[in-house]
Image (cartoon, rainbow, N blue to C red; front, side, top):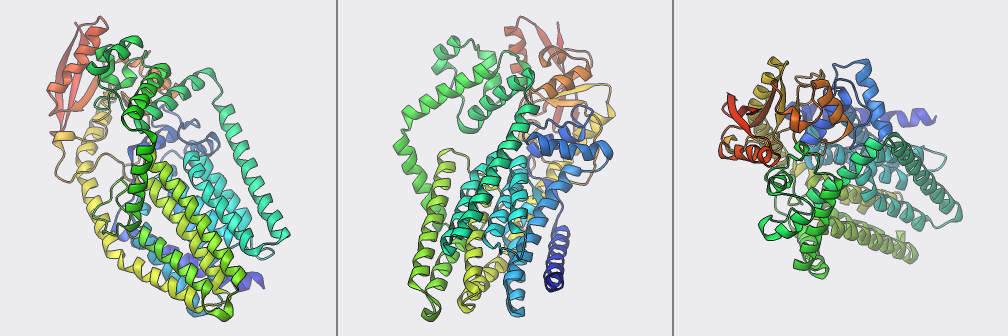
Length: 594
């Protein structure tokens, strides 16, 4: 009987997903959102070192090993992209299926189905096409919070599914899961708070304990897999690099020469460290100790220039601005300006939940209303703390902010559905309002997606030509300047996007005869393995080999002097000759010892 009763909900949810997939496929193509995901895919697939790697650096070992296993079986598929897409659409299915279970009447089921569909394509929309593992992690976490709150004991298996979603999210992007975990915990606490009984408390406590234990075990397995000395050394470099380039800045050389002299960094080495160059893989002396010292020095300078109280005040100002900035998104950008319609929906849900639990009077009790007010205050305090934290950390791209909005929206939606069981009039009116807002934003979402797709197609013309050149010259090896790997700089066409890769197109997981001279992947054991396969002991000497070449944007003629100065400071005189130009954008240089 239980299966028969839930079969329509299952079918409706499947149809909803099918419509969403077809709609997104109709209006655009799938891309990895950033070059970070491209490098991760290359490591997992074997394109980086020549064999699928389970040590994927950015993700925890168990899930890296799992995905790389599929590449070992069938190398020709884009398994990493498939995995991310499945995770995202599966989350929409689970939200829809559970929401439909809660709705008793057909008209309510139709309304909820339309809400989930239009919210998915009108608000989340672009994230389904421009896939990024951080957002996927946030979506998994938000779905888990929704399932936990709507769990019905003896009726469904929400707790079990939520557990696996949280574990998967943690393995996929541990930092993002830990950022959203306080909201998950708030959802658990509010669930107990609204029910307020001993059995509920023990169930919630048990779930929390199991989640914490599972995350600890997963982290333990990861640390054991990365316990070899070479991986420990690299992890130190990775952490130091993250602190310097993601959260700090590189102080100017001339004004801080005394500091750089004290840590043994000369002018040419400083040039490698700067944001304008970032080719730190060339120099083995730029290690974790150096990067940490620069980061700590920059933090001290910044703290002196901008005290904590001043930063906190500025963060609150930006946070308040985000609450009431209702301007329409004009582009798909990795910054924090795309607030609407997320913030509008959040505000309506807070007000809607409050009003729904207060009216009509005959369906309300003072005790329940007070509990809901307390729950909303707790949720808002948690979200405020998280937002202030990320704003003060100067890291507010939409791949982080949108998941924070999403988990808050789903928790509020779950509270609203809980009320609908007792008083269905107001809660479903609120759902209708949100559904209409989501629908109204579908044209804007399509406009944003169209603009971004056009920008990425312009980008592909340049980078497809470059990567075709690499493939045609497979006996050579190419060291790519970091910022050249991101954009054509002065040779970019108007509106051209930075580098990313299209999913399910030109899939080639064979060994790639090129590598970046910087970024988060350099100096790892995988880099050593890749260089060794090419016949080089390190990047500095490898670049001077007869079959090695450097790639930099062709318009940056004056900018090539940095490589000459670097080798001169190392006691090596070199000549730099331009061999060819690719698609009027990239120059191929030979760097040879005189």
